[in-house]
Image (cartoon, rainbow, N blue to C red; front, top):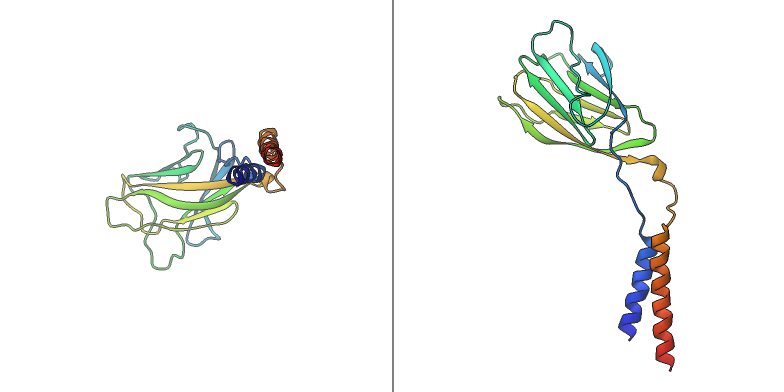
Length: 193
């Protein structure tokens, strides 16, 4: 009987501690994409903004007009897909500190918690690009990426900062807690008889 009462007590405690956490996505966020060259402080070819949505309706191509080849960026709920076609135009010049893309998520209620390259296809011997990020910013250094047909998929994890306050248990959690405590009380009463 003691084992059963301990089980109900542990169930009640674990139910009370459980919190319903919803992972955030970038859907609906305004994402600004900048081409930076030759360093992180110099914007090259302007920037473009899009509202993140499922599918290709939000796909953008931030490159100078008349540029041969290029790339298309398609942000999704939790990833950013970059497809290169023709000559991508990311140089391999020795004097360059940075030649790549910067992604800025302007939603103040979400934070970027992790970014990683989950898929990478190159037709040449290109390595995984240099990647840095903070709460609302991703820098992807594509120095030396020239080939058409290459693509990169960035997995982006975000969290909702509005849920960072003290969690409040849901009614179902309280019901489980009550059932667990009632079970413990019932078993104790039974043991006394």
